[in-house]
Amino acid sequence: MVLAYALSPPSEIKLDDPLAAAMKYTHKSEKEGQNCANCNLIQGEDGQEWRPCAIFPGKLVASEGWCAAWVKKV
Image (cartoon, rainbow, N blue to C red):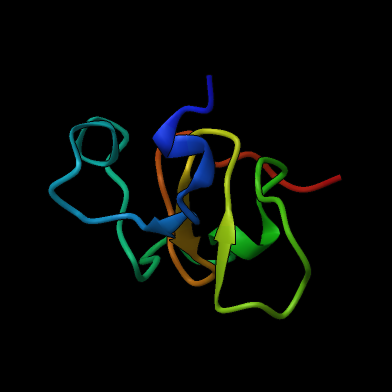
């Protein structure tokens, strides 16, 4: 059996998503030097405006965004 969500492309995360709210996610970081693009949990290719994140399965986060799970990319 194929599950419907497996066929759906990832969508941009909404600020009212329960997990986004719990993680204090925002589309635009207010933390100097911290954003999704330089977080160790970001996936996908550098330079993309919206990218997958290990914290938000099936969703895309803004490269300029931020959440409480941010950890410096090594």
